[in-house]
Image 1 (spheres, rainbow, N blue to C red):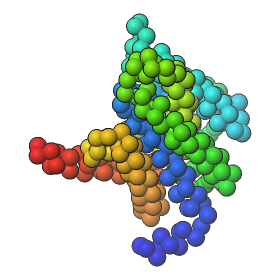
Image 2 (image 1 turned 30 degrees about the horizontal axis):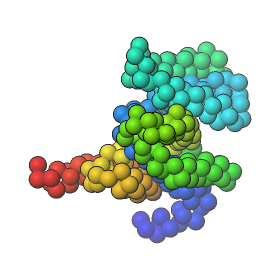
Image 3 (image 1 turned 90 degrees about the vertical axis):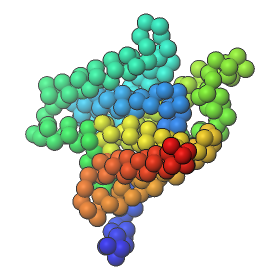
Length: 279
């Protein structure tokens, strides 16, 4: 098996897949800690549905660069959810459900009515659950992903203390002079970038797992924000690497394999945390 893996690593598309998978997973895990603590852990699922709807529109118009349309639409939806989630008339969970289900329904409707594809069911399944497209990446795709991922990571590191303040007590941070609206906007746009880029890795319906599982696993092991953030990134990178390698060797779906490993790691961390606490 090791010799087979070494043979596969000689192919550029395998190396590209590993690089993109790790970068996306790290970005998702960094944002995941903040989103889980802000009780927006399910936002990844809602935004992925929005991205699905945007990509459906892009495919109908036969746009060569679907990200040019899906990214701004997803970012706008993220801003609406994170900034308007505390509206007294429409709470965050209700707004998330409305946008998520509505975008998914309109996306599938548009693909059915206007699509010229001969394999509509296959296209929809591929978009929702991921495919082997992660194994067909070009060097330009890798560069684009690397640039976007690096931007998210650099922003998170540079604004770590502000994000920490906004995450734990937004009202106190605002009273202390922190521009909470600005940092919420940055978090929203970063989420949109990660969601759109990650759709090729795990599909629209599984993206929230990359956001939630590593963060929850790290929280079972550590209790400080910094330690949880670092541990979450390490766990996410490991699960992405292991998932892609196993999927290549065993011929299993890439996205489902990564999420399954994330779930197993969370189970291990949960059991360890219970044992350590003596419960």
